[in-house]
Image (cartoon, rainbow, N blue to C red; front, side):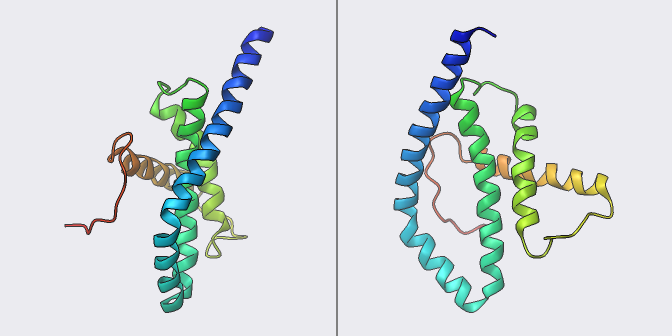
Length: 142
């Protein structure tokens, strides 16, 4: 790999972090009041639910983060399978940080790995169902 290729990669990566951080702060600022209100109500009525919400938010963050990194380094055309492999470890970390699973070891490793892949894939499908640039709003399921 040439020095210029490494430099280009690092420039794109730096640009991603700069742009991504700014966008993340904008999104967080826009959603914080509503998210905070919902989480407060949920936590007050069922404190255990807040843990589940945090776990799901971490899973979403992992999947979105992989897509953002891929886009930033010019790999937005990378295959879904490549992005899936890259996102699974973050999803696993989010799940293992949940008190229900923390410190435990799966009895059936094949089933565990299959479930991690399925969860990651399903969250990616959920996000992709809204399309690029779509603002997600709360809509009751029908």
